[in-house]
Length: 443
Image 1 (cartoon, rainbow, N blue to C red):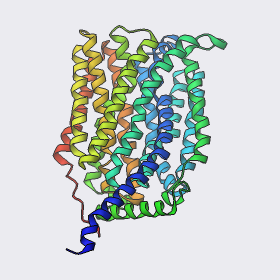
Image 2: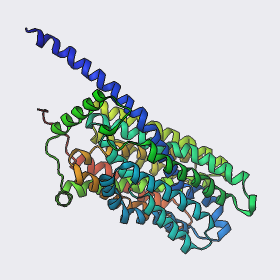
Image 3: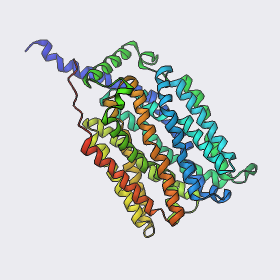
């Protein structure tokens, strides 16, 4: 055996170790800041679920009006998400994310002054308009920095911020509502919108100065580190084989529409838990906003752990289908438990709610491995946004449906049965129709 052949495994191990160190450096630089932005976005999006506990009574609105307002956010998402992601690819991440973050912060603050349902609907729509592009934009942005085999972990860490937002947002909203009510003549729910909107505006300004658009522009990496990342991403691109770059061509691919349908089913459950989780806690006997906040915080902490673990495990085993499908199945089964025992067992309802959050949220970061394995370039920028925007119409329909059913029947159980049935469809579709990834050897 030649000396080169003997040393080859040593060189490969050394190169892998060096890349591991570089990607850890990238994670520590980018992921905590992106998580902070997602925490702020999520809090400003879903604090409506907490302020609902007092706002509806004060403004004399129905559950159906709330459900429509909560869900109409996603119509703004639908119309503006694809243009926003295409703009990100053209002008860069930091400019796009700065615009998005400042816009949603100001809109959240403006919502504190709503008096009519019409104004509430308009501002929720505008919140969706401004936030459109952030989530799929970050998914696209992370593909510029991480190869396929390291991406689910990065996705899982970033997306777990939505669960951490639940950990932070619930107790924070409850504390503000309890302690600030009446200050300056404003209700507690108005103070929630103000105090949770201001940090987003400040974070948007910081984004422009902190983020780096692409690895080759990263002054905080050495020249060698930038080159190694470039070479690694290029190897990964070749290993994945041909991927569609044309947005129009990707629309003709049946797999593209299959992924939209799968994500639609997952988002129907996720949005239902987001906007009606606090209501479910209240219905089993916990009426203090702060107590509701702490219970939801515990559930979302478990959700964060599930998202991160599922992402790590998916990367380690280079497998996405079962990791996504089984997580969605867990979420569906747990929702069924909540619906069955809503009027009978508070303990089972809270346990089911927690497992539903864990399962549903854990499916999301692994899901995004699937479209990124056959889309690239403009098709990835527009395709990821289009998948997210169309699927998020479930975020409009599901809360509205739950609100209408609650108003008509006085119970959320019938609506939860529907949501559980929809979510289990995601698991079935993945296992039956999503093919296993077959990488080609890099040359």
